[in-house]
Length: 266
Image 1 (tube, one colour):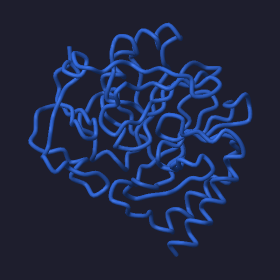
Image 2 (cartoon, rainbow, N blue to C red):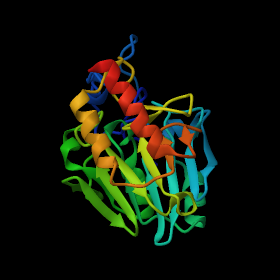
Image 3 (cartoon, rainbow, N blue to C red):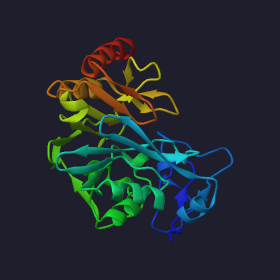
């Protein structure tokens, strides 16, 4: 049972009832014209929603719901040599999702790219008794404080095995991507949320401060992010949404896309 309030627009779960959603009132999101609306997990589970679990790549299971809740991103469960790790969260979480993950061996940890995907992260953490890694630069956006949340600082963190969390600072100051060198059968993968957003053409990526309000990211931050990524090898990049995956030559795509972006905004 979980009746803690969830913003219907962004999916953020809060510890207590409140009239506003700070995430949606920020210029990187929006409050619907009809006003702030709320739900909770009990209501979602009793409604028309169902778990969606689809393979997104080798050793990568996409987890979400149909229909989608909030922004509509999907989480990614990756199978590594040191256990399963969850990248990003979705607001919808039910027994089917929990059972499937348990059957696959559970989780060793969770990491989230930025506050728009914090959603019901505490529910997930409690279900699997694992930490949630969040960059400390985004601590102000945490809607439900909990001892399972582990704030980290600096440019990188190794949460286990060969995984590396990388703070690029795009979209949010704590905006983070996950590098998995063992992904794609050893060719390397970057799990990017929409810190580095995979475009619908699956041939390019973009960098935005606000997606719904069409505010581009500052050139200096994009230059810094691309410079940091030059130190990491990856053949595939996984974006925030279903089937937003560039399966080959993704590192070159990121750098080429950054050059195009900077040529337009500089």
